Length: 119
Image 1 (spheres, rainbow, N blue to C red):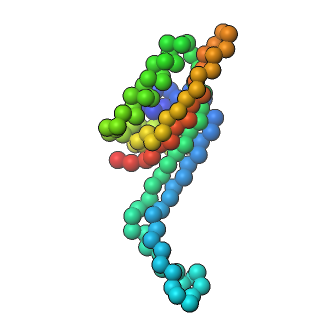
Image 2 (cartoon, rainbow, N blue to C red):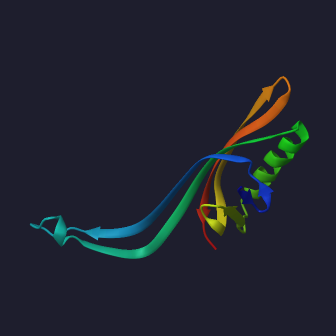
Image 3 (cartoon, helix red, strand yellow):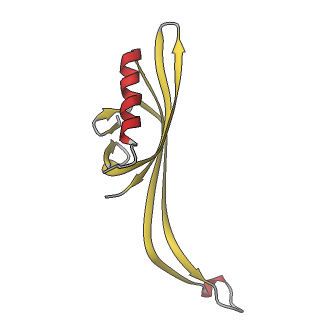
């Protein structure tokens, strides 16, 4: 199970994590790559991309989509992501997109989001 600020994210179908250091690199003239000087000056960024599907009534799914839109408001103070893979971490929503799926007897939302860990 996964939640974002206590909101159930439904069934996670894809979980991608990337952790990237901002490394300054200075190659040495006339030298091979083993002599390159690398500096880890700017720290590390961890990004998590989720793709999932959430089912429910039209009203439940509209509320879910509205909640996710409202979290990504231009003045984020961070949200708590809880998953089996991450435990509980503080994140900021970088991207959120979704698509309604309307079948004769059932509604669902297929969504994707990119989150950045931070405080």
